[in-house]
Amino acid sequence: MFGGQILPKFSDYITEHLNLDLNEEDPAQEDMNGIAPPIINHAFMAELGTQKFSRRSFMKWERIMHSHGACL
Image (cartoon, rainbow, N blue to C red):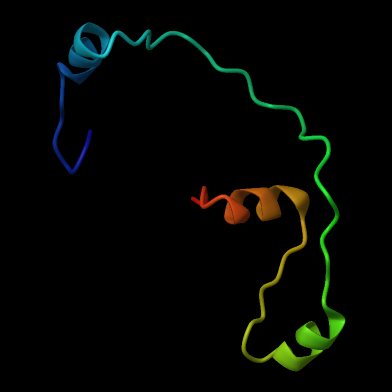
């Protein structure tokens, strides 16, 4: 379903026109090595406080996703 519409022939279209194998699996990447630790500007973080920006993350995977514009 896409946009509220059922597309019964979509998989056939993809297979034929885009030459994709819908049964092929791409294994999940286990980890990324060589990622530098975050550089935390403590003075800046203190100035932000907790009122304006309550959610902050320094987790490696979140940093990778958001730094490359691949957020979900």
